[in-house]
Image 1 (cartoon, rainbow, N blue to C red):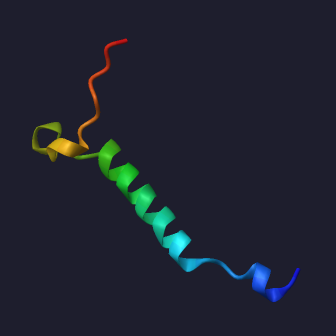
Image 2: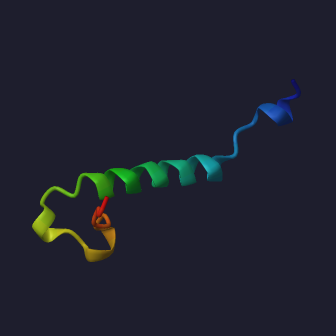
Length: 46
C-alpha cells in the first residue's frame, strides 16, 4: 500500500468521536427531570 492510502482523515475521526459523545449524552443524561427537551427519546407505542 502506498503511504497516501495509509493516512487517516482526521476530520472523519473527529466526526466519529463527536457522534459517539452525542450518543452517550442522549443515552445517559444523568437525571431525566433536567434533560434538554430535544435530546429526549421518542415515546414508545409498540
